[in-house]
Every structure is written in structure tokens, then in C-alpha cells.
Amino acid sequence: MANPMYGQNKADKAVGSVWVTANAASATQPALVISGANVAHAIAPFAAKVVGITYNLSVATTDASSALTIDDGAGNVIDIVNIPVAAINTGGVLLIDDGDADATVAAGESVSITSDGGCTAGAAVLTVQFERI
Image (cartoon, rainbow, N blue to C red; front, top):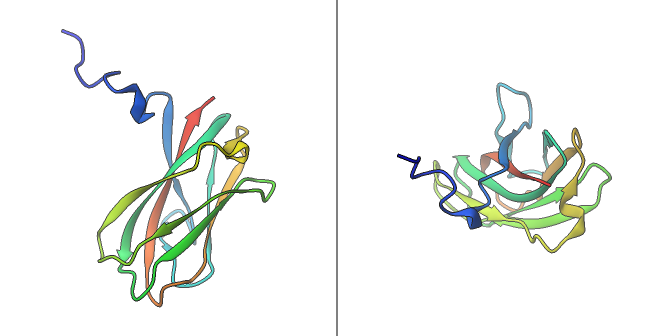
């Protein structure tokens, strides 16, 4: 019997993709403090297109959403996405506008995620979805 979970929904872009945790302070403390203007980085494991960011809040966001600017290694803006005001341990997927040519990165290129500090509290573990090209 064929694996019923493999290849059933190609539109979800999971086939040929990998998720990489974006490290902020260190590999042992990957949460990005989004209540300040801080940066996390993820390295593309192969030539890829950045197609999504996931977040899991380890500290709840308060009073405002937090904008995340995603840049490629050359500093070109890939997209700007928002983490809404939410409780601790909530998360979600933020899709990247795949019409942007800057979303393509080379193997080994660093993708940076910078928070705008829009909320007065908040920290999130972020992962970047790289789709092989």
C-alpha cells in the first residue's frame, strides 16, 4: 500500500521544502524578542525560494502587532509580514508574497528577519520555509 500522506497535496508546497529555525541570540535560545528592533537569521540549505515563516510565541504579544521584515543576503526586502496580538504558545504561518523575485536565495545565503518592536512585549521562535528551485 502506498503511503497515503506522501504527495497527496502538492499545492501545500511541502514536497521539496525544508523548514529552518531562525536563530536570534544563540542556537540554544532561538526566540526572537519582537518587542524591540531585533534580528534573527536562517541559512538557506540549498538554492531556494522563501515561501513562508512560522511563529510560535514564547512570550505573548501585547497591545500591537509586530511587523517582521524579511531580507535576503544582499539586504533586499523579500516581504513584510505581521504577527498579531496573541497569547503565549499560539502560532501561525505567514505566507510570503511569491511574486517577488527577491524571494529567491542561493545555497548558504543568510535570510534575516527583523522585528519592528511594535508591541511592548513578545518573543517568538521563527522558522523559515525554503522551497527548492
